[in-house]
Length: 177
Length: 93
Image (cartoon, rainbow over all chains, first blue to last red; front, side, top):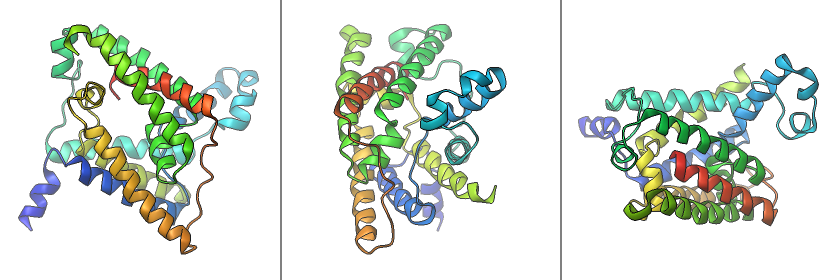
């Protein structure tokens, strides 16, 4: 039993275990909730709700009316769950840390400036949400949720993601690639 | 509110698995694009193999229905993926 507990608390699981676990979770989620995963859409739902307060006229446009309805629904609740679950996992495995610059590798390549990191995070996140909006989902909402249902869109999305991800990493890393 | 509890539970397990697989780390995400750490690929492809196997089994048994996935729209899916990948390599998530 202590072996199981030690594994449960270990800071890193094999990606095969993690992936298999996520596959099983997807099966259970579809069986019991008729839905699969999603993370990026929730930001648009919340943005719609905020728009209703700031500018009700804008919130009535096609996008929030039909594509991404405003409100705190299934997606937002799942996003809160993702935050709590990853935090619980980090706390229990003892890897929880508050940091301004996230990563050793980042510091080695781009230096310790926190504004550079935060700027890149913000810019990258805008591209992520914009790309996910055009494609119809993000890594979880399209690549995995679509992939397990063998939707062609998921595999087209992943192809695009890897093509530009590799090129962007080459450009950013330059000689260090 | 009770209708949303399953969403919270699924999200909690999802976040737990992502954190345990260290996919919340900048280096894990970027290094798959540098071919120095393929954990992201192993993770995504394993989840698709396991998930697709189970879901199609249950579908053939008549226990689940597919969610009516994102429609195939080659330009949109691919272009969205291209923009998404650039952000992913820059931000690392």
